[in-house]
Length: 528
Image (cartoon, rainbow, N blue to C red; front, side, top):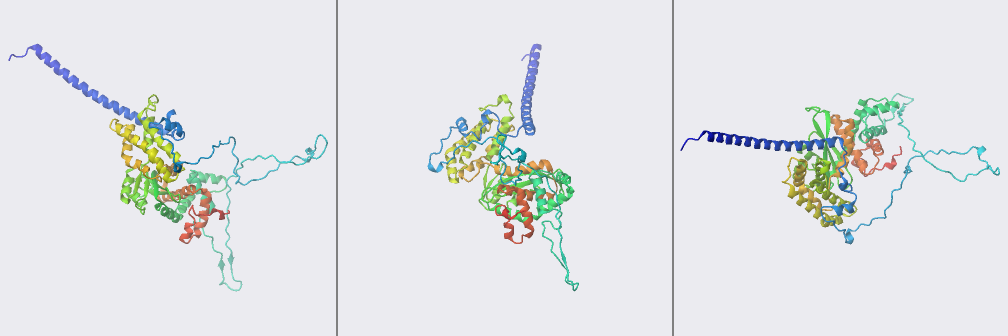
């Protein structure tokens, strides 16, 4: 075979160079696609973080979602599935009273508030008729009311224990016993302790601000004194917390959640280490809101908190995997939270540019469909559990099946690292627990009751920031439990705590402690 000519060598070299350039081009194009994808994901995450920091916290966005949970008729007519017909059976009907418009104008002041009467009369010289000189007679009064506020009144209760002695000998010396106190030899009365606890854990007023406030009214107390008193009160109410836990573990339905808390002085741990407060809420029976401190968020802490729960108890939680292990360990019926599933689609939608948002966008379709479920739940709120289950079987189940089909169609066509991909994979992973609410009308659709109970703690944490010691964290959890349980039972927290702090030192038997539980206590006998 003849040797290649010079032009052939050049052509071969050019072809080789072209192939190398094409390979480099393809490699660079692939790298560019990866970089662009990573850029888009990072921009999406940045937009989500910026919104989380600075934007409104409401999940309702856009005109097509404006009435997601309120305008039921319009929502069911615009959803991605056909509008379900209203129940027609007599068992499914609900009597609704006539609509009443909320009266406009200023609301009347609470008639239970104490009132001071100030009577304004004309002077005697002006009570003469200008026409005939007769004396005017009273024919009625014109009433207006103002709200008056008396600032904190700081006073001292002086206890005098009378001494007695025999006038004939020195053997009959007697001393009146000291009154029982929640904190032996404590500086603060039961009313003062209740005020401090409510101010911190209900009103979010840190102890150093309370000390400054009391100082303006003559109550010179240090922050350390208040802190020590709060810790000792939190320890003293432990018998009531134990009874609350017993009542919680007996409930057929329990809702659980957890949030972070910082403890500065915890043995063997840095001050910056995250600790946790676990919240447990009874979904049936006496309303219980129980807070508990835990050094970790692991399964060992969860199993300790739920130890004693009966097999078959229903547990509602978010998608945190520890609750899955907890359900398996104790044989619980585990429900998934639709609010958490919806929230991820809301985040995916809000990360999009405004021009790209529309009802046809995939995240918006999931949000609208889940909104239809909530509209049905609003209709079923006043129904008995059996009626609610029938309504769910007829109307909610088709919507749930539509959501499942939509998720399966797009699960593998969306990048799993994107916010929409994360929402789809969360929905798919939680699906067996999410659909379980259809099985029983007593099952809730979400964990919002527990999240509402934990919200005061999260808001208060922004003010007091951290707990100094583990004892302080546990005391705070106990006091939050009493306050939130009192609120759930319709009691005014200050009045309840003042009564408990006054009667608790006199409690001796189990019946005495049980009488102080929020659903059993009688506040009418506390006249102070």
